[in-house]
Image (tube, rainbow over all chains, first blue to last red):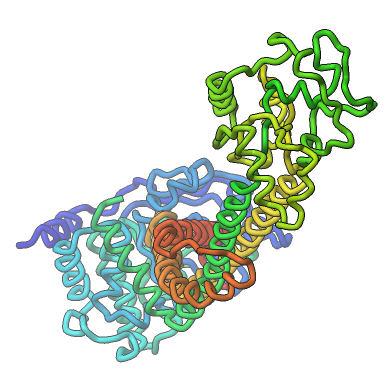
Length: 245
Length: 360
């Protein structure tokens, strides 16, 4: 049994508990243009949770995610992600924060000139992994998303769903403890959307916290996870107690 | 940063050049043009300096010593007794700075009777003393050489420089030689001409100095002018080089927006993102430097003939004398412009994040 498999089994054994992985304390964000994106957000997302973030366009979902990734800084309030206090951290620390998370984009963002294997390996090169380690972990990640047999294919030869699975493998390969998926099913057909969310659920079941932004209410209903609803920059609903919204 | 990461990034930079073949070739082409002009400006300056240096060496200063002739033909005031002037005249010449007339023009020279002159009236009595004085002159800063010229050799030289029909002008001497012995002095740097003359003049035993200060000033101003022009050319073209490399880097960055946004998302440090661009910029600069050094050899050979005629240069400096230096200059220009432009351009965009970056 490989070291990675052992780690996955160990992760599986860890049940979700009440240690906050993401914490917003009185966070507000107003852009220079004057747009008030978020107002007084107070929320905790614990380790091992699966959270859907829903809301209409312009509600503030993207700003919420950008604040977690430290693409934006809040005007007021404090954000803690994976132990990093985002309001006090220096620019130099931002890459270290991002290494603790895997990001899945709506538009896949695969490099068209690299094959599937190299697209996934790209994330490992960035953190300075060795070639032997890269070979092993990329293969495992591709197998996990069911694309081990397409390692040498180019992105243009894959369907939308397959491309998103490559994106998922790339997000997973550095073993983050938080996956941020920004409308990962936005560019794939409905059947494939379920497969993507099932994969995310499986990843979550193995211990990784998943935060997924989506517009698809049916998916949210079908997968019955925690849902945070944002409207006009405020959290208007959060079933953190497991109840229905 | 780990060594394997660095190797990976080095390869990434070289791949960038290949991926942007057309832009890279265009950049190298324009860089070669800029560097060639810089190189030619440098070569021209060196050759002009060499030629002017030769002229400087020919621009001889004649220093006449305070020997018996300087008293005989120099006027009554040089005598300790101050009387018995055999030819009445008001004019007397102590220091001449324009020509030989002060020592040979009989119409304006007061001749003192030798019997009236004592040993104390002059300082240089023997050739040994004159040679010692030459040695003192050599020790003056900026003096390149000081060659002893006896009074006989001096007169002979003047006669040689005149046309044959003018030799009768010396008949009035009636076998006498009014010239003092002295030293033929050359200088290293003509811009220090006046200071050097003043230092020589201050030495005991020096009587008069004959020089061509106006030519020295002209040579110095031409040298300065050529050097200033060369620096301007180098400066302007260096800025052009910076702009060219910057544009190439900017295009590469646009082409790699997607990769950079992914890099940032997965936790790449700023240096990880910068290094391939620096490698690309520096490589373009070095390749251009190498090509320019080779190309200039052929341009130089072609230009040499023209320069020989236009500037009356007897012998140009061989290209091999400055090939390595030129390559060094080009490499510095290439590396510095590549490094700086990459650093500035990428630094400007590294502060952008996510969607902001993709919207560039």
